[in-house]
Image (cartoon, rainbow, N blue to C red):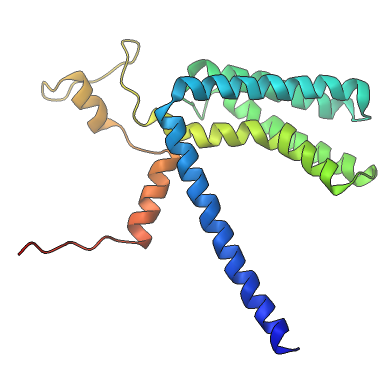
Length: 199
């Protein structure tokens, strides 16, 4: 193997590192945007759900997809719409969330079987997977951090500890489990800040 061939492997490793950092930075930025503008994010995700459902309806007339594949896709979009009713809160054990995850996995299986039996260009396969399978779940994944800083409402049950007010109790009792919290934990773990000495 030539020296340039060895350099190509080093270059590939550097490119993978740059792509990983870029994707993480983009996810962090999107999570901050969703956290700041939850109402707009909900409207955008609703439009994504409607667009994806309409694509499945168009596929009925234009493609030879199997009926289970199309029904799983439409059922997943209906469940995504149910998940959005409580947005920005996402309950992981709700029937809508669990059903959406199951339909997503089953739809992946049907898609892999279909594209294995029917020849399509790579760009067509990636178009189906990106727009029909990954777009809405990715948007919901990014918006998981949106419920970290939402103020409590009168519908929520709060338990008072030692006479503290509702808002203080709310923020002290909640565990941060969103995407921004994960990135903050990774930043603190991998890149700890130095304490500056004041003279």
